[in-house]
Image (cartoon, rainbow, N blue to C red):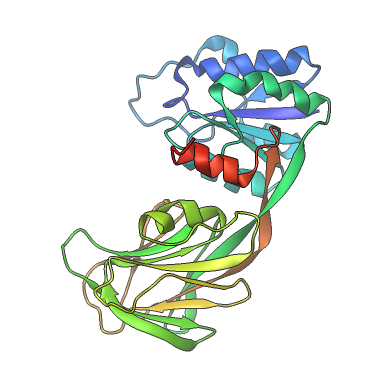
Length: 287
């Protein structure tokens, strides 16, 4: 088995968790390489231990059987996008605050020996595809494991939004924006905005208004085969689209944002046997 270890060096200082995991894996007969998920910030004073023996991710990922990432949910989202290119399953080790998508906590690294023994399961997670159409042509396309979010700019003005399902009007309202989430993303921004918690292995689109100025604007759970459209009619201020918390795309008046179920799935590795309900209780502080 070949494993790529992908640590966020801003979370995993001196790569302690990553290097501990490598020792556990290699002692179990697993071939393990370390590759950073992103380039360090320019001028960063972080020092990477020489023993890490960093490898270029573009060289080791295509040959990997498993990608293990160390950090918060943002690190897992970033890693999942890279792993998707090579259909590599992802295992997350939580070094952040909540880490809904992570399978292991830092104190559970010894469980990684189960990988070599084949004692794990792979869970498929639905993704969505976000597109922006402008004057009849596509100007933006991106995949999301969590969500696509349309929000206003920094100026404290509300957005006027029109929502459609398969180009049929659903509702219109004013507010700070809207979240289109997958079931995996239902426990992220969508939940914070008042949306429902949906089992992550389900297949639905969750549409959640952000601070809507209408009494009837409520979160909706739609069939995954729908195409959810968002339009900003006559809006001339700043509005932005962000996919999985990444770099924002500036929207213009008349743009159509359309979200559909993606053909691709993210594959997450499960080692512990913990149920979704146990995870929710643990992460939300009820247990």
